Every structure is written in structure tokens, then in C-alpha cells.
Length: 228
Image (tube, rainbow, N blue to C red):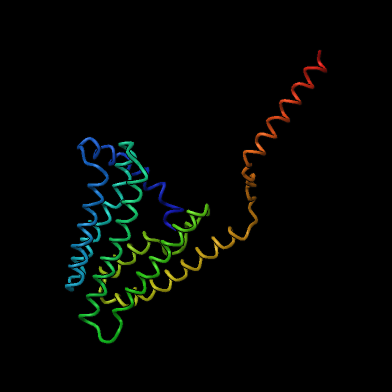
């Protein structure tokens, strides 16, 4: 939902910051690594029970995540390698953050409620796979009510108001499941539309190629005799 409605506006707003950072010599990869490090600190802090401190580090994680693309565009260094690294970093960051939440719940809550953030993470990975697979097949799988940006925002809310942590996680689980269904239906509909299949010509044998060459030569001779 964020990608479809606000991403372009946010990118335009970050363009001047990206240009300023390029002048300092910093690279998008360095910014991505800083974001990974911040997410690791946030995960440990959350796991230790300091949720509001974890909220601050989560904000610090989101800043590099937003700026690496702006720096790449400003420097003109966007590449497939950079896009791959950024995507892998996003999955790693998500895993550490929700792992920190699971660690916290395992230490403070009875039963198996620690599996709640694990379930959210599993659905988030499934959503990411849906998009990657769909795009590899030529389909569009963007969109949904709970994409990555929304999950980070909702998680930040839960950390800022710890008394609402469990309720917020349940809401996130439901909305993430709805997003998975939305993407599946979107790709299913696209894949159900008949698409023209390119016709591949059968590979000719050397004898067939020789026969065709002789036929063309005879046709040229006949045209030459007719024209004369």
C-alpha cells in the first residue's frame, strides 16, 4: 500500500538529502550496512525488554533503509547488485527485529505466545517470495494492506506503547495474512489471462539447410532467365 501511494513522493523528498550524502563520499552499500547494524542493536534491545529504547533504534534502522536508494539514484550507481543487497538486507533486518520481539515474549509471557511474531515473520517472508516469484514470471505482485513499510510502522507503534504489544501483534498477523491472500489473488488473475506463446521454429538439419539453399539458388536462376 505504501509502495503504491507514497513511495514516489518520499523518494522525491529524499533526493536532496541523497545528493548531499553523495558529496561526502558515502556509498549506498555503506548505508545499507549501517542499517543492518542498527537493526541488530534494536533486536538485542527489544529482546532485553527495553522496548521504548528499541523503538529509538528502530527509527535509526529506518533512516538508512530510506536513504540508501536516494544515494544510489543521486550518484547514478543503481545496479542489480545493489538492488539484490538491499532486498537481502531488508529480509535480514525483518528477521532480527521480529526475532527480538519473540525473544522478549519468551522471557516475559507464558505459553507459546512467542510464536506470534514468528508467525508474522513467516507470512512476511511468504509475501516477499510471492513478489519475487511473480516478477520472475513477468507478473506484478506489488500492493497489499500490510507491506514492509506498514509492518515497520505498526511495530514501532507496538514498541512505543508496550501495553498494547500483544494486541498490536495480533492485528499485524491478521493484516499480513490478508496481504498474502491479496497478492496471491492478484497474481492468480494475471496468470489466468491467456498470453501469446512465442512459436519456436524447429531446428533444421544440415541436409534441410542444404536443400533450402539449393532451392533458393534455382529460384534466383529462374528469375534471372525470366528477366533476361
